[in-house]
Image (cartoon, protein in one colour):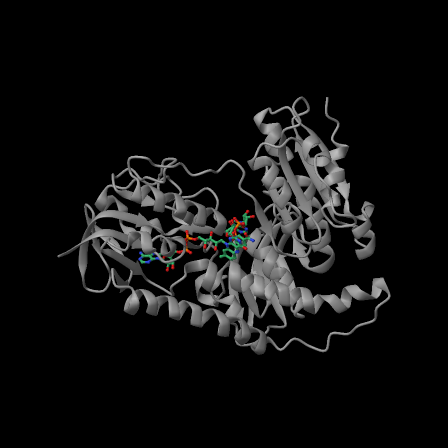
Length: 457
Ligand SMILES: Cc1cc2nc3c(=O)[nH]c(=O)nc-3n(C[C@H](O)[C@H](O)[C@H](O)COP(=O)(O)OP(=O)(O)OC[C@H]3O[C@@H](n4cnc5c(N)ncnc54)[C@H](O)[C@@H]3O)c2cc1C
Ligand SMILES: NC(=O)c1ccc[n+]([C@@H]2O[C@H](COP(=O)([O-])OP(=O)(O)OC[C@H]3O[C@@H](n4cnc5c(N)ncnc54)[C@H](O)[C@@H]3O)[C@@H](O)[C@H]2O)c1
């Protein structure tokens, strides 16, 4: 049985660990799918390439209010799809070739890994290996809810929907989180009639409620949004999927040619048979790790979606850097920093968030004040004729410490970055607002003014 210094399971963020600093280590990498993982192949990167294309497709419709008459002649779906994956697929394939053929100290196994004993792994290729150290970086996969006959009607998840053969006339999206919000924007901008089914009474309900309410209100004007609905049964009649719902007004049926299931993702820990090597998991399947990304078994680390509270690429990448350091310096480990994890929803409008929401601050009993500033009240907001976007900030009234920031509107994920920096480096609201220049008339003025509006003691 071959023995390695290190085995890495999963080539998402885990793939970045084995760099030249590990040149003297004998390493195995096991991957069951395409090299590069979720973000590259079926996640952040292709979705944002579709989102940008959708923003372009949506521009003519938004131009008339500025006095510019433009017309969208059409979206060539297969050209868009093939442009995007024509760029991504070769990156995954080159990544596989590099690891499999040109990386002297790495042995690449294309298989589904599973532990069969303490630090003993079946690589899914017919070969069982052992190692001193393991990195569990096997990510997660879409959850498929328990809806009667769902399996038999045929549905898509984010793993498959970007490779459709043709745009359907209608699409139902079951779920109301990140994936639902982004794909509803993409497909509706491409001319598909979109229905969004939410279990709760708000879309994106984990966002600050002021933001989620504004998003839900705007989405309801563009898509057929059904709130407080439970999907109970699915059937296919000819080419049409009929999704049976129960809601506040009783039973109803939504029909569409395609169904996208977007109700969350679960960790892939169950694929790894972790009890065989003694690694503990939480009841929801996340691998238990300490602040140094160490699991319950000495020498076994975990990172990213398989263990984290935050299913985000920048978190998986950060944790991979922590694991990398701790593998090389086990006697001087560094801790992962999860104090201020930002996130963004690339829908229309865009949303970005960092720190506490108002409902979280209230639930924790934290003393806070808030302030809001509309895009409509800053000069660049006038230029864009934006009358729905705003920034909201929360701060400690005594110290001015920034507790959270939430933005809905154009370029929100870019506009929020200075607050992430301020929070990470301990800059208070007053110093942030008045201790620097803010370019006039640029969009971050929405933040400057929100900070100045805070009723601090
Ligand atoms: C549609 C979508 C859009 C997203 N957009 C964003 C975004 O804009 N910004 C953002 O920050 N995050 C986004 N995310 C989340 C982000 O993609 C993930 O948080 C991130 O990719 C997780 O990285 P990871 O390395 O933990 O796991 P992954 O990238 O999922 O890598 C895990 C790898 O392990 C492999 N694997 C699993 N089990 C086994 C096994 N038993 N044996 C061998 N190999 C195995 C898998 O095939 C996979 O390649 C998005 C996710 C989705 C689904
Ligand atoms: N821009 C980004 O950073 C980005 C984009 C896409 C995905 N992601 C990551 O991927 C994760 C998964 O995304 P997601 O949208 O699938 O999950 P999500 O957790 O964001 O949202 C899932 C939604 O589905 C609802 N839901 C759960 N079960 C349901 C059911 N049976 N019927 C109807 N609704 C149900 C939940 O209430 C929730 O609102 C996200 O949490 C995020 O971390 C990030």
